[in-house]
Every structure is written in C-alpha cells, then in structure tokens.
Amino acid sequence: MLVFDAGIQLLLFRLVIVLLLSVVLNSTTFANAGVTSSFVRSQWPSNDMPLDHQVFAMPKGHNAPHQVHVTQGDYDGKAMIISWVTPDEPSSSKVQYGTLENNYEFSAEGTVTNYTFYKYKSGYIHHCLVDGLKYNTKYYYKIGSDDSAREFWFQTPPPLDPDAPYTFGIIGDLGQTYNSLSTLEHYMQSGAETVLFVGDLSYADRYHDNDIGIRWDSWGRFVERSAAYQPWIWSAGNHEIDYMEDIGEVLPFKTYLHRFATPYKASKSSNPLWYAIRRASAHIIVLSSYSPYVKYTPQWRWLQAELKRVDREKTPWLIVLTHIPIYSSNQAHYMEGESMRVVFEKWFVHFKVDFVFAGHVHAYERSYRISNINYNVTTGDRYPVPDRSAPVYITVGDGGNQEGLAGRFWDPQPDYSAFREASYGHSTLEIKNRTHAFYHWNRNDDGKKVPTDSVMYHNQYWASNLNRRRHH
Image (cartoon, rainbow, N blue to C red; front, side, top):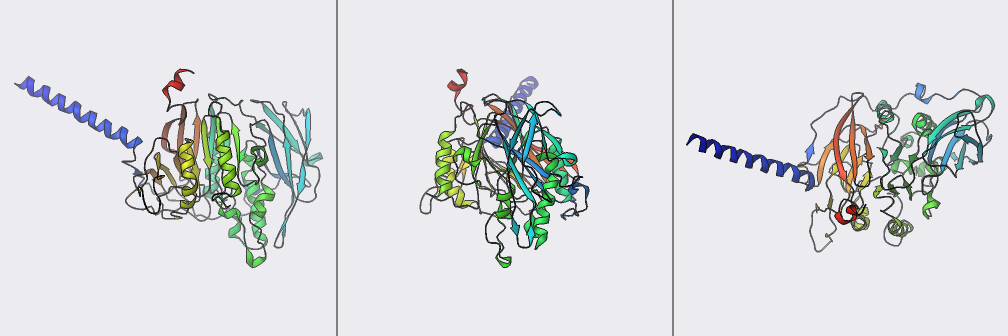
C-alpha cells in the first residue's frame, strides 16, 4: 500500500512539473506573464558633462579634423561615408585609404558644407563616399593634412549571405551625460560591429542660442571614439527637429541633415530621413517618425516598394528602426506611435518583420510577438493578440540623456509586454545564422554592465517553414 501511494505521489509530482513547464513555455510565446523589473538604480545625476571634460577634447593641430564618424554608404555594404568637421577653414575633403596601416593606396574626394543656426556658425562639414570596397576587410583611412592629419580604421561586413553571423548594437536617446558615457563605454566592450541608432542624438536643442551648435559639436567629439571606427546607422528623433520659431529657425532637421549623411538614394528613397541598407544577413529599414507617412505620402510609397524588394533568401533578418515606439506600456509618450501602427502594422505582419526597434521613451521594454491588425474604429478585436507572424517590439530609449528616466509604467502590465525596466543601457543582437539570433539588453548598474534581459529568437522567415529549412 505504501509503495502504491508513493507511485501515485510520483505520478502527481511529474504532472505538476509538466504543467509548470507548459506555463513557462507558453508565457514566453503567448503574452501571459510579463515581467516588470523591481530594480531601482541609484543613478548619477542626469546632467550633461561639462565642456572641459576630456571626452569633448579637441584634437591637437591647426584645423585638425574632429567629430569623425562613418556610416554605410551604399545598399549592400561595399561603401562607407566618412564625415568630419574642420573648425577653421574648409581644407581638403580628400580621404586616403588602404588595407595596410600607413600605406594608403587609394583616395577619394568628398564635399564640404557649413550652416548657420541663429548666431552660431558651424565648422566646415565634410562628407566623402569611399566605394568599391572589399567585403570582410579592414581599411585604414587618413583625413586632414600635414601635422593635423588623423588616422582611423573600419571593418567592412561579410558578403550578403543568409548564414553570415553579425552583431549589431542598438542605442537610443544617448545625449552627453555621465550616464551616456557609461552606456557608450559598455557598448564599446560588447564586440558589436555596427550601431543601429534609433534617434535623439545630442539633446543640444535643450540649450539656447549659440550653445545649441556648441553642444552638437561636443556630442560629435564624444561619440567619435566609436563612430569613427564602425558605422552608426542613423535615424532621427524629435530632438533632431530643431524647430525654434522664436529665434527664426524654422527649417526642420537643419542641423541633423547637414551633419549626418545617409545612403538614401541607394535604396531609391527621396529623403535622407528614411532609407534602407543590407548588411551581412540583415535588411535594415529606417523610418522617420516625424515625416509624413500616411497613405500616398512619399515615405508610405517608398516603404511599400522597399518591403517588396526584401529578399529573405539573402538577408533573412528584417529589422525596422523608428523613433517612436509602436507598442509601449510606459506612461511617457503613451500611444504616440498609434498612428504609425495603424498605417504600417499590417505590412510588418504580412512581411514577417523580425524586430522593430524604437527609442523616445527613456526606459527599456520588450514585447511578445503580438498584433492589433483586426481592430478598427467600429468593429474587430480591441486588444493586441498573440501573432506568430508579428515582430517583437523593443524600446531602447535608455541611452542616458539629460531628461532622465521614464519610471512610470502602466499597472497592471499589459499582456503584450514581456519585460520592462526603467534603467539606462544598450542592446545587442547577435545574428548566428539564418534561423537563430541571440538578443540581450545590458543595464548600466551604477557604472557596471549587467546583462539583464536575454532571449534567443527564431527567424520569422526561415524558422516558420520546415520545408524551406530541410532544403538548405
């Protein structure tokens, strides 16, 4: 009798374990058990670093190039746009480059421009396209002249291939505070090869008069430690609009468009604020939250065409960058992305977008795969539902800017929200092959990098079709 009771108890115990595992597995797939982190950081003050801080130091030499940064210069990763500023005079826009250090076989000529903003006059801004590059190659480049010349390097990506491993970093709303410095330093230790930047760069628009331009300059020198050596894929946020009617500056994105070049023409875009690139095994689409995107507008027409151009056989990982989150359970900027959701969400689901990264909200949040495409004003479901064809929506507006953290989430946590925390940090997406990618978010815990939220994802295109996988 005792043996029989023990057997029954063992059977019941096994049933309980199976049920618990089922709950856990379902919670990762079907928006049932989201986590609101209880972590509270004793954050450093959200003040910009002083202009005499070493991270803003000017390079030595007369008219020395500074604010050096690079971004992809074509559609497929065989070109780079190199940008920099000379403070005193236009000087040369030539880039010398080659595959051996201090041995520059090639050269390219760029362009130079400048602008005024109220009473501020910018330095001379250079952009130079270096194309015809080889894949998987380290290039050294030199800009400037004589004793003021400076040398840097960058690595080109592997050829377009569905199984090409590649690691992207994701940063948003960075600013130039001590928290910003912590984020950037931790990112630079991550091993990521390209930054996907989801808008709100310098926060210079929080200053007045000449200080606006001065703080754009300081931010350019601040990020140079990373951006001169690997591409930052730019997207614009609200702090790049710079619309200031009281001082007569009414041209939106004036500063941003002068300073940050994008390869928009390579993806048949009519505007540098929205464009696409292909890199390794990823197809990356950059959208502009603050440009018209409703039906029939240029951005709407471009995205419709671009999604049809995506070839998941070559670049299986489809990633969208935008500034305003489409799904967010934070009270800050709540529902601001709803209009873009109404316009584009059906496309995201139809084309099986893998990830939509956003910033704007100064906190971190990751969603489940959900959609609300059956809702309209008069009929249909009113709430997001699990949808295996939908993207994961991730908010990383936690770079460290002077506005501080957005610590107020809606309670209870909605079913679509998988993990959320109001802390500073950055994310990385490690693409392993055509079917798997490892994503993780790293918190800046009082100056220390702490891996906090990690998920292994299956690719939406390949992992959803067993027959397709069997034939490769």
